[in-house]
Image: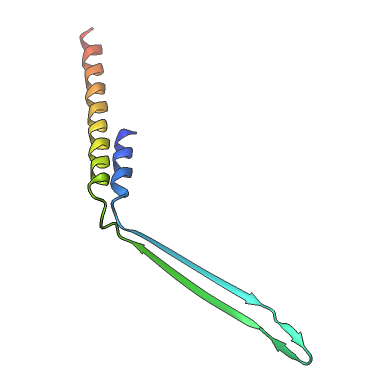
Length: 86
């Protein structure tokens, strides 16, 4: 779990890409003998977020998460060794 927390902290520093597509259709409005606003439309949106200025806050979060993961692993190893010795 601690390793996944470290990976999540690292993911905050990576670029993020989002893609959204939509289609809408309006049957139309009859005005006299003519149909107005009859047809469909399609839209596509691409969003790109590249974190450039984070002023060391995010890298410290990653380092703290990695240190916590290493601490948990060392504690687990210590418990295994102490169980084997007893």
